[in-house]
Length: 152
Image (cartoon, rainbow, N blue to C red; front, top):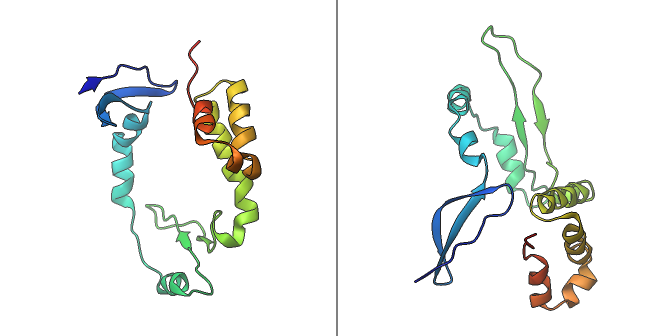
């Protein structure tokens, strides 16, 4: 099996190797992802969380006319005091909030492009992929060429 040594993108680090199409390639993961997952404060916080099902939320989720994806959170302090419950019945991304969610999704897409590509390449990728008509008429190889990281 051929071993390919390539540099990871900016903001990523190599953690071992993986097989891809019969070749061994670097396994690139976002920097600091491991640090966050291994932070003992996260486990300490998890130990304090209590999850309780709200039967109405479950019923609304299974109702084909509603398809709610509700969640709520209440923060209770060690002295017994608490903050008011915050409930969201239809989170951003739900079809009932699509108009509100699409701009946020595009912003997230652009943010992630900026983590990898220079401004010129980001704009070329966004101009094509965010225009359905143009995107659907572009040959796959031309689309994929845009996602090749150009080294200085």
